[in-house]
Amino acid sequence: MADEIPILDLAPYFAGETGALPALGAQLRRAFTEVGFYFIRGHGVPQAMVDTGFEAAARFHAQPLEAKLAMPFNRDNIGYLPMRGNTSRMNAVEGIKKPNANEAVFFKRELPADHPDRASGRRFRGPNQWPADLPGFREAALAYAGAMEELGRRLVPIYAVALGLPADWFADKFREPMFTLRMTHYPQQEATSPEDEWGLAPHADTSFMTILAQNKVPGLSLRLPGGRWIDAPALDGAFLVNGGMMLRRWSNHTFLATPHRVTNRSGGERYAIPFFMDCDYDAVMAPVPSCVTTENPAHYQPFTYPQFMEEYTGANYGERAAAGVALQGA
Ligand SMILES: O=C(O)CCC(=O)C(=O)O
Ligand SMILES: [Fe+2]
Image (tube, rainbow, N blue to C red):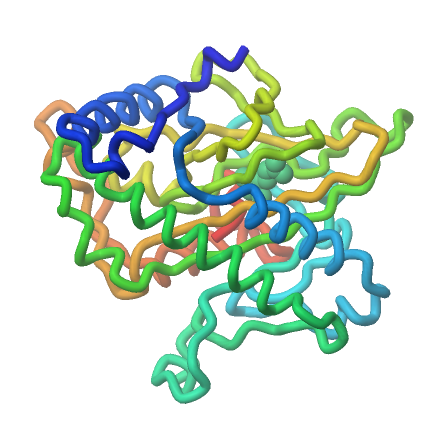
């Protein structure tokens, strides 16, 4: 099955080999027009860093519930969302009725206390909440997020080339990109649990780019454009990357935001540490010029991260549904 999800080797590009970037751009374009997911190898992130991320997730969720509830999910999309705390209300695939069988905690970029965005209370720019009694957790989470941000930013020029733009086209839009690190715990779902109870119901991500560390515990599946669901293959040492609605919009629907879902019937606990990367807070996203033609006129007015997120966040986290597609993450 692995052959259905393209595998991009970044090593030649990172080594500065001539022709590596255009080659990756062509592979990425294929991945995002045919599948919506791709694997990366040769990414340079040590396995120890990935282990750090998974260990932090397991430690966080092993805390007593009160410790987790002490940092409640808030309007900045930061904090802890308890088990069955959200429902992916609607999506393009099927109606979702049951809350998701997972608990998750969300972190964003750590801003200095005197950052002007904090003083002015700009939404999605508030302080991270950290567990009071988990030594080393904050450092581990920030190290993992830092490694993912660096990786994500190194991938951005490939996106530009894949879209037929100059390699540095996105450079001034990813100076200090918004991101979310999510640490999710999917407890075992009983064999007798209803078939339409999901660890995470079918959804599209909100992100520009989601980087998902290879999971030792299976459970993720994705819906190919033809409608067939496939289990995500396990590829040791690789990251699985997909695009969300931000990329889909920005590319004027040229690139896919492929629906995916999680169920944990593995017989063990499952953790996931997706990293959702978006553009700068103030970057204006107008459908990229190379994707606007007379046959495919612009589908959207220019928009920014906060506008986009405000439009969509209400749909998933218990407020009134605002969108026809379930969105997660970012
Ligand atoms: O748990 C996984 O493997 C994927 C999680 C996911 O799709 C998400 O958090 O948006
Ligand atoms: Fe997702």
